[in-house]
Length: 140
Length: 140
Length: 140
Length: 140
Image (cartoon, rainbow over all chains, first blue to last red):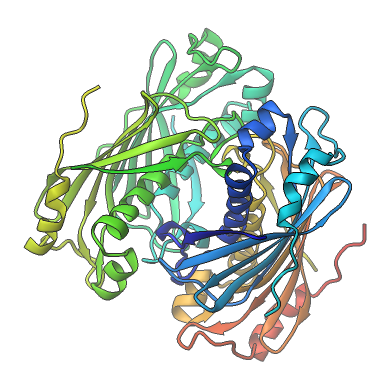
């Protein structure tokens, strides 16, 4: 199973060349992970960080910008989990407009304690929540 | 005395119309207040919020967009304090490119305790630091 | 009739004090106007600016920050039109979380020709589209 | 030779965990390339895109987040060019706070014609301008 959400390229996302300002894609990747937690894992980032005292800082973000997106394009963002380590999760993210792939990204996050700021082992409860989203990235 | 800093309209600040994306001006106003604290008041916002446990949330921001700014324009931002209340400070901000005024803003902030999240009285030490920047807004 | 949309305060909207970074409200106001055009007026900003060659730059934005919003709050944004001039439109925007009003804003935009960059008269077709959203701001 | 600029982690760059919001690093990388063009190559992005009709869209951005940065940290950003292809340039970017490396990134851009939106060959004039910044990434 993968997690999919449509995102519109808003006025404020575009740059003076009339295409998406590339750093905005990093924000859209962050938003997509937030959507996953809020909508599919039933845990808002407020609950995660303030109540459960868990954080998921980025460890690595790699983005291939395959084709430009322009104002008001609707992109389908798809997220899957390609690997779970002791304390890390690796996501792939692919964004398409119609048939055209625009962005292919991998994002690795660590699970940390917000109190110690150190990586912690992802427990079985969380592994069970993430497991349905284990998926290979699409081949294109 | 007023506080002045030059700011360049960066690539990432511009929108699909090739001019500044207006919400970025709100960020530039926030940056200017941060510059004032860091550079003129010898107190970074880290020191203010984490060590002194004081916050300065916005109460009101009013911005008149007088003329558009384009990519790589250098704007001179000028800030003065027009009023100090019991727990509030009102700034005016004017941004010019050469002779042309581009932005005229007023920004009111409150001084709060980060612990209680309530407004507190601005003490004489702070009043003394702010006093040199009391200034009337420029007439144009 | 007013135009309403829910917006979640995302991770990326919050600042080091754990509340919304105030300049983000300016972006959310911009987003709301974009939503109005895309969803209620059947005209994306791409169509407006690229095909119809019309722009709607901000003239004034006034924001009262009534109470702080925190991570993952869901705010109901409401927009109405309080005035239409020869070439300008004035919106009010109110954002609430449950019963609590968080933001009250007024936003004035001008309608311009993207070719001449000058204000133009809002024609009857557009006046007819905007008319249903004429509304007085809520009294609180 | 490498290109270095200090950047402060501003209030608006931090997230609800009190550290830099990671997507902001993508923006800081974009800013650093803009600084290189404006300050070291004597060509603003306005001149590049509007007068010379050349664009430099991102092709790939890879960022390793090595250690968190907090509010008002001053980071030294260093940029070097590791490769020049027919129409592409690959930069490395390293950001340090004191002795600690915080970010290690590689950024590949293409040179395109703003008129055709197609990649073009980087000419000898530009190669000459970029050549002094050819550099191996620091080993850490």
